[in-house]
Length: 253
Image (tube, rainbow, N blue to C red; front, side):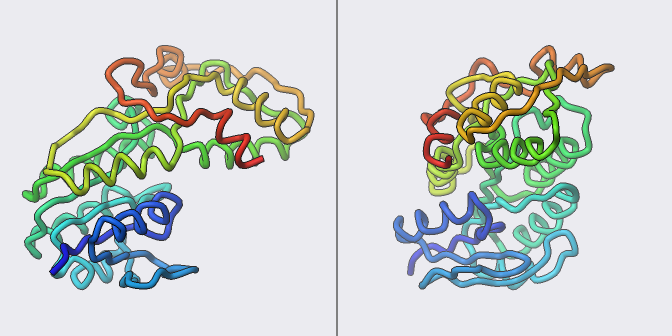
């Protein structure tokens, strides 16, 4: 009987790529999400539940050998991971593969603290585990710039540099990790190039054929200093994806 893999957040941008890849690898796939799939795939079992509220998890993990934890939100990721990992341990899950974010342990912001809390919940669960920290996805950067472009002028925090990674590169990496042996905290995954946020914005505007004034915005205090120092980046020792921001824009726009 094929191995059963539970994917949390399997209807999100990363999950929609990973689920068919798991099917192609011969796995039996189960997806847990809050709202169900808009375009369900044949041979995939879809379950609804809420990780933050702790609802629907026991049924989802029952009989699964591997859990791929992709689900995340603006807040509550640490709580969600705690509920999931405790249920996984009780169910005898053999491997949890988890996606996190680069600098989860370096930036004192609520989002990153919750991501670090989720990492700790996975590591302390008693279930063998693998955690991959990835940079911001191209899709996320595109959405942020699109929202900023609706303003009469676009703010450009001069201290912010990003090394965005393509979602397909992340899907390829997490597939390999999920199907392999538990490896703990593995090398970070970032895109092939580092960009200033203003440069990303200029390329976005040029691709859309739009004009906006870019207004430099200083980032004071400790957070500004950390961004100026590149604390949100992994500039050495990271695995690098293959698709650049320019490649992504050419495809999308």
